[in-house]
Image 1: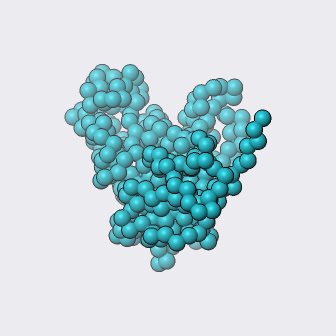
Image 2: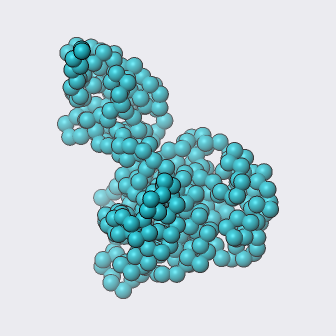
Image 3: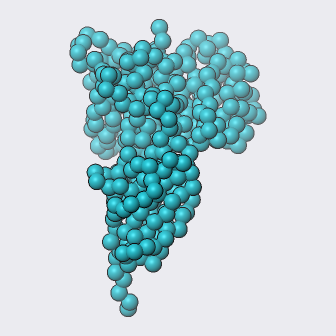
Length: 377
């Protein structure tokens, strides 16, 4: 039997025609590097490997050089956050020279292709802006029969005034992600710190929970989500934090599959929520045609969520905000959904992120716009 020797895995410093190291590189690691034309140069040391492939949106075959150093420069990339992985002999591995992020149902390496400073300012930390706090909070769910974790953002000043109470946004990640996504990939805390400091958004608490919640023994990854949120998480937050515990000061939002969950919460429980936001996600209604929601049967729309859209005047009075957003490169599906609801008389706000697809820059921009409309007096 032929002995297989594992190739050593490391990125090594070398001279390259690159602009600067990725901001997610570990200390002292020079690669990957973001070039001036937004291409990215990778170097990877694997002397015993027969082939190494970079996957960044598509596969790039790497070229082996001296001392087993594999190198490749990609095509120019669009700005924003990008997952990537390395494949050695077909086995996908993370880059040991960089930070990892939970997405695509696994931990992955990532780069950030920077926007110009003015466009990136809303999700860039600033020295002159007071910072809120993000806490990792463990709680036991009797519904799921397990210990769980959520992240809770409290705005700057929360601990300075013990008498002040705050509205709450329940913010969900997408499929293949978890409760860490909105902080580490989405930069939700930085976005909110900047908005609040500029007076563009009301100070609020944000709760980020894992959308994966199953009943004990169930093979359905989501069947306990709504019960867990409504019967456990919301009472837990209202009991532990200084919230304004009424529907007018409670909102939900999410991205992709999390958008569906946010709609299910906010529209399915009108006694608990007064605002809903869906980023790159549809409102699922009965036999909803996900490929063309613009021609969804009106009878189905009126039957959705126990008839919440049936009385247009009541809906528009009860809900302060229905927010629908998408990336421009995602197509017209959600634009048509917004138009269809508006034709029915349902007020909603539509936002389209320029030149982005189903990705974190779309969702950062969506949160930035959504948060400015929430809880306005």
